[in-house]
Image (cartoon, rainbow, N blue to C red; front, top):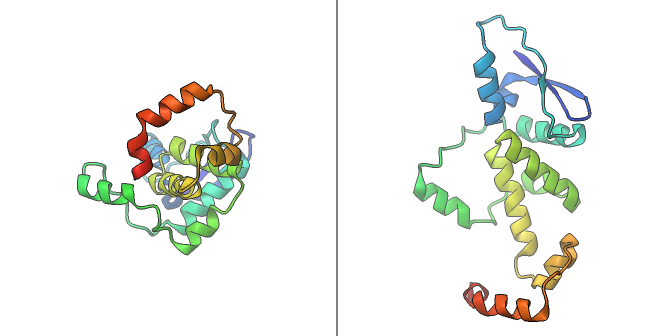
Length: 167
């Protein structure tokens, strides 16, 4: 069965249902509207995702369509292990997220909205690797973040978070 997705900028993408179901949001929507075997589904609007980003998300889902389903968050040991690792990115995935910062953050937002946990994790691990070992000033520069702290506020924050510098 094919599914048609419509992006924020009104671009249509027709994809296989198994590809669409990499998204928990879309999987649940498709299950909710299923009326039997011969369903002619309406296009699914995705108002929070642009066509440019949706195309990339679909590419990711097509590449990973045969991956095993994501385990539930009830498995605490698996969650703790995966949460702490940011260096276990496959080559294809690493190449996929070699994009500019704005595009990377749009992919992360789309993955969050569409509930595609592996893509969300990939994006977040990529950002974590980008900021690892950087000073606050370097991170601000990397992401164009304005420093609105006074020197006194900054010093207080450093004192309160000394434990983090040891990690």
